[in-house]
Length: 80
Image (cartoon, one colour):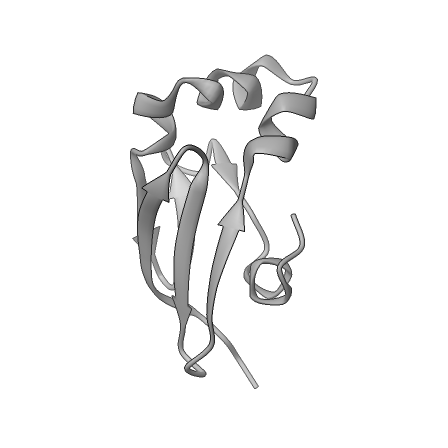
């Protein structure tokens, strides 16, 4: 089964609520990932104003033209 993200909503701090094409909904907290990042291109998303500027393109969540993105299935399983 191919799963895609149909909606993503910022829910505060570094949390995003995802709705997937199979009806599953999950809230994912990105704070640990961002705080432990070593890459400055990723760490800059600790700025919440930048973090909130994601978009959904082709069923995937992206930041700044794929500067930061995650495998859909990992998000579906709650793993980042």
